[in-house]
Length: 274
Image 1 (cartoon, helix red, strand yellow):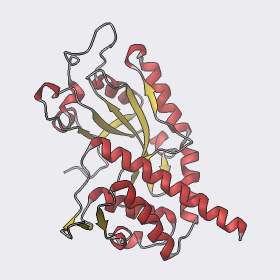
Image 2 (cartoon, rainbow, N blue to C red):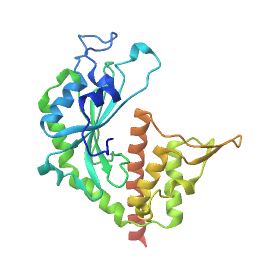
Image 3 (cartoon, rainbow, N blue to C red):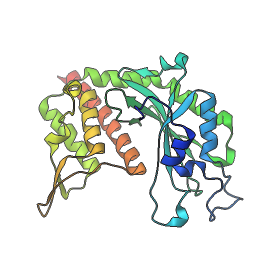
């Protein structure tokens, strides 16, 4: 059984996201406008510089003709000892998150991710200091991929600074509720009533703290993993489901990270004006 600390084998990757290994593009793509590069080639390039896959998933498709060409996501972690110290960010490890598809509609998209050791909730860093980094198929080469990885590593000190500011910024209970209420609107529409107190209720003792970092992680985990009490306009009671969609998972992670950083800014501004 995988603990989250071992790299996936090729067989496991093929089982979790077969589209990574698709050997040709979707039929509707034009060879004059789209240069097919299999994602498996990028996996091999990252392996040469110490980045190995630890998680993979692919988007579900309704049309069988799209099977094998859909968007997929892979999370990579660096297993070189010399690099590990640079990628250790407090209680988290920096990862590289890659998305791609073989339908001609996407570039190779790289993002920074954080694997939190206490729960492995898989955050995605997406704020102003690090935009998504893209490698387009038509100009693809191994050097571009390696450069993108280096750029993400170079941003680690900035990520560390952001996390430290979140750790140092405490919230009152009403401020935690305000944070959760804003997060709720990112996940659900106004027709769903959500147990906001449930969103800020930690699943473990380590997270029972009122700083922004732990509040953010608690809310993120509760939103992504589900199990929160909900009620619709017809007063039908239920519990939220786990977010399994590749696109939705990334969208929520990005939005919640930005929200956490804005909470830090708001608290800082309020303290300066006090």
